[in-house]
Image (cartoon, rainbow, N blue to C red; front, side, top):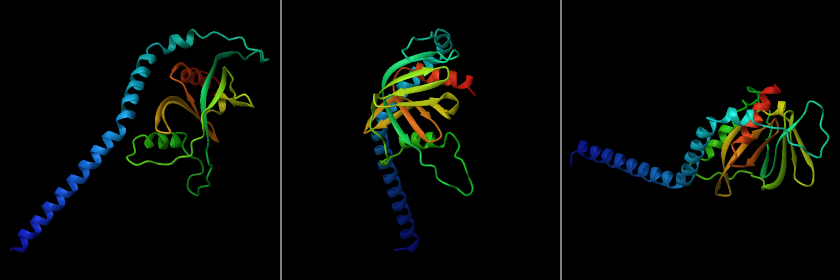
Length: 202
């Protein structure tokens, strides 16, 4: 048999094998990400619709009376009990880059939703937490202790679909210098309130 013919058969066979493998991976990818894509597409539509009325929602905010003493220039505008997950961020020393870009961790987490393979990430349990948002800070009360986050310390605040133990949850993602916080909440108003007061406190 002609050597050129054998080489041609090998090349064609290798090409067919690559196509087969790529096809299998593409099929597995589409199956794996179907649940995520469905809820993400739904969430994006909700966000697009909400953005049309966001300014009116923020203008309509009214102070809420609470039992805690506040400074004269501080008022609470949001109170709710939500499931919350906290993740501490490991601060690693780097020679070339001293500080991460504020979006780095957010983008890394987002990419995990698109990965074909599973990544075991450290995700703390959900905790029922009472949340107060004022024009100055966020106060989290889990029944045992209070966590106070000044709005000028918030580095990033975004909508996010969280993969929590295989279940996709609509969340508001918040990042500070040393931790990430996921508020499990389909109410889009939460993120826009935080973002609005965060701008005022910059």
